[in-house]
Every structure is written in C-alpha cells, then in structure tokens.
Image (cartoon, rainbow, N blue to C red; front, side):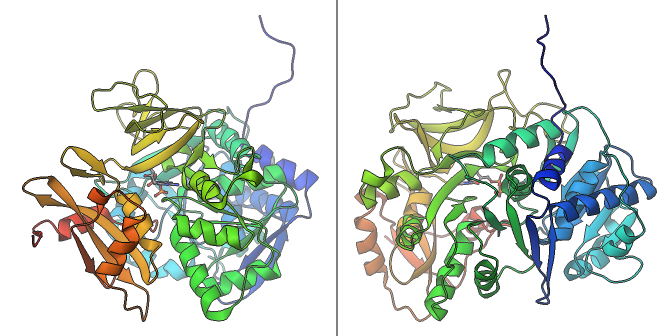
Amino acid sequence: MLGGMQDFELRVPRLLDHAAREHAKREIITRWADGRETRSDWAGIAHDSRRLAQALERLGLKPGDRVATLAMNHGSHLVAWYGTIGMGGVVHTINPRLFDEQLVYIANHAEDRVLIYDKLFQPIVDRLKPLWTSIEHYICFDRDGADGFDALLDAEDGQYAWFEGGEREPCMLCYTSGTTGNPKGVLYTHRSTLLHAMHAGSPSVMTLSSRTAILPIVPLFHAAAWGLCFAAPLAGSKMVFSQVNNADALCGLMNREKVTLASGVPTVWLALFQHIDATGELPETVEQITVGGSAAPRAMIARFLDMGIQVIHLWGMTETSPVATAASPPPGWEDMSRDEQLDMLQKQGSIPFGIELRVLDDDNAEQPRDGVSSGRLQVRGPWVVKRYFGAPEDAVDAEDWFDTGDVAVLHPDGTMQITDRAKDVIKSGGEWISSVDLENAAVGCAGVAEAAAIGIYHPKWDERPILLVVKKPGSEVTPAEINAHLENHVAKWWLPDEILFVDDLPHTATGKLLKTELRARFKDYRLAA
Ligand code: ADP
C-alpha cells in the first residue's frame, strides 16, 4: 500500500530554486585576489547557473558527465557547481595543492570533460594539459575574453529548465586527500547531498538561518566546503567568499560584510589570532566559528569563547559528505564552568539523526559507551560512502559499516571523542598514547606555534613519543618548559622522550600534519637514552 502524500525527488537544484524564490536578494559577495569585490544574490546565482547549464549543453555535455573545477572560493565557483549539477552533470572539485602526480591521476580517473580554473592556476594547467587525457574544454574563471567564464555565460539567456532525474543519481565527486596510495573518489548523490544540507544547517550543528552571513574559509575543494554551499541556500543565508586566504584580507572582509559565521581548519584560526595580536583588529560581528578537519586545540576554543564567539567543533571526512558529528552547547551550558565547557567542545560532539557510530576493539568486539574503551570508529548513514568511484567492491561491510581509520571513545552522555588516527597512535608498552592529545596540549604552551608527536622505535616499550616543535617567531621556549606545561595536561608516561625544534612541519593538501612524511624522515632516528 502507498501513502497519500505528494512527493518530489530530493535533487540539489531545488535548494537553489528555493533560495532564488524566497531569499532572492540575500547577497553573495566575492573578494577577488586583486582586491576587487563583486556582489550578486541568490536570484543572480540561479540565473547564472541556468546560463552555465545551457553553455555546458552547447559544449556537448550529457547528464552524468564530469566537470572539474580548480579554483579558490568565489561566486563564479558557486555558479560552476550549480550550473553543472543543474544540467545533470557531476561537479568534481580538484584540490590545487595536490602533487602533480595526484592531479593527473584524479582528473584522468574521473574522466573529466571540462576544467574550469582560476587564472592563478594557469601554470598547473599549462604543465599538466599534455597529461590529462579526457579534458576537452578549458575555461578560465577570471579571464576576460572569449575563453573566459563570463563570456561563456553572456552567450546564453538563462531560459533553462533543470535536468530532471532520480535523487540517487550523482551530483558531485570529491577525492580524499590520499596520504597513502592514490586518492579515492567519493561520488555524492543528489539525495545524500540534500539530506546532508538539512543536517549541516540544523540547530545543533551550524545553526543556519536567513540572518546568518557565512564566510567559508574552508576551500570549496575541501570536502565540498563542509556542505555550506548547499546548506546556505536552504536556509537563505548570505555567503561571503574570498579568493585569497590571508588573515588581513579575511578580517577586513568579515567586518565589512558583517559575517556572523566563519568556517575553517585549525591552522586558519591560528593565523587569525596572529593577525589580531599584531594589529588589534578583531572580527566584530562573528558570533560563531566552526572548526573541523583536525581536532580543535583547547587553547583555541578557549580564546574564541573569551572573545564571546561560540565554537562548533565538527568531525567528519570526505566519505561522510563530510559533516558527521558536531560539538555544540548542550543543555545546561550556561551553568557549566569554563573548564567543563572546554571539555565539551574539545570532544567531536554528539551524534545527529542520520548518523550511527560504533567502536570496535582489535577482535571486532563492539565497545561499551563508557567513556574509556577506545577502538576503531565505524560509521553508517544515508550520507556515508558505500563504494568509491570506479571501485570493484563496496567500501563497507555487509551491514553498511564504514571503517573511518580513526580511533575513538563513545561517552555515556552520547558524545564521541576522537583520540587519534589509527595509524598515528603511539603504541608504548601495549598501551596507546594519543598523538593528537600530546600535540594539542603542546600548542597550549606559550611560545609553541605548532607541534607534531610521532612514535620512535624503543627496544623495551616498542615505541616512545618524540615531539617536534615549531617555535613562535622570537620565542625562546625550552624543552624543559614545554615538558613542565605538558605535565599538567597528560599522563606522566605520555611525556615525550625527546622534544626537538624544527623550522617547519609538512602538511597535506588540506592543511593537516603529514605524519607519513614525518615518520619516513625519522625512520632511522634513535632515542639518545
Ligand atoms: P579532509 O578532506 O578533511 O582532509 P579527510 O577525509 O581526508 O578529509 O579526513 C578526515 C579525517 O580528518 C578524519 O577521519 C579524522 O581523522 C580527521 N578529522 C576531521 N575532523 C576532525 C576533528 N574534529 N577532530 C579530529 N580529527 C578530525
């Protein structure tokens, strides 16, 4: 028996139609690399997206075809997403910070037919064009002239009806950053994207509404900018984009455009703090910061709370669209001490409807939610990957559980806490030391800009931690001072056997510590004692 209610396929263009109809004048602002600022609104983005859909069809693109972007954040990039998806295509965001070998691999693997790119990345295009085997059309976002993005749109009238299809058809392709082996493609569906947008903007996650003005500092090529470009039209929020990511430009932009919510990885906020310390300029209108991609350090959360800015701490991965859990103020928040509030926000948060989590030990036994038993974190839900693009087999077990590669603890209050990446935990005498906890404690020490903990071979304990530290400019901090600071935050047996100062630390294309390279670099290192 069927019920008696109306139905429509949960397709992404409906989000844009809604915004263009109900929030037509809510603005979309772009600050370009050359300092120019351009303004559009949801009605304008919808009109331009229809014109791009027409142009792509004119180029011969068919539903299901892949259109790649190699670009920073701006309104035209948003149009490229919606125009491609609107004609039934699949938008493939490429991370320009990947190595050449990976850039070649993913565009060929995705069989991209079109590449739309920023002038800034012209050298990448010139270098790799001979190696990209499927790209037929190259379009430059910010070039005047016949091969420019605007000229392409100007040739169309926007009289276009979105391609209609099923909600389980694909709309977007995102590759994981692939710290080992080749990157893997996650092929989002219209349905998974729309459900994720409803979840990401909801009150216990990013709390989006039509009064929110969002600055996604997270790049559009980083895990779909955490779903913000889909959640924003749903809520009717204003969006503010910047093609450049330096803190000076961003802070001024936030104040001019009265940004209320900004999102980015922890390194972005460290840069903002440095800007504030150097100039005294504060983001005056920001009410909420969302941070994710790596664990948010306690000192960072504390500084934002002291500034009167709420922190939302997100956990997820490309495979989870990407937002899965969120730490936001629970009931009783106002009555908590500052330390209790920080404890809460330092965890990766509570589990929303649509996401299920479990933790397994090495024998695959499910662990209790007791706040101490840690193990491999698995996830499932309608916006979690089932099979990587082009893979011969599913990436999940028979019950759809996906192994995240993270090590976590579930707490009795329903919150989840990541303790480490499975491959980064330091195994000392049969016990696990969390490299993340050590690093986060270390960056709370005055004079420490960044820190990485890795395990070094030890004849008795198997592995012992060493801590690699980048000092803040001008700092004279000593290993003894760092150790004294760490003693207040971690168990004594976790303290690093050695603390070494380095000039810089290697990062992945999404700004995370590249532990594989650090481990390779220190492979033959022997502890002095
Ligand atoms: P990204 O595109 O963000 O690099 P990946 O899928 O490569 O996404 O990385 C996802 C991984 O990032 C997670 O499995 C986890 O290890 C880490 N991560 C993301 N958010 C957090 C967080 N809030 N705390 C700790 N680790 C996180």
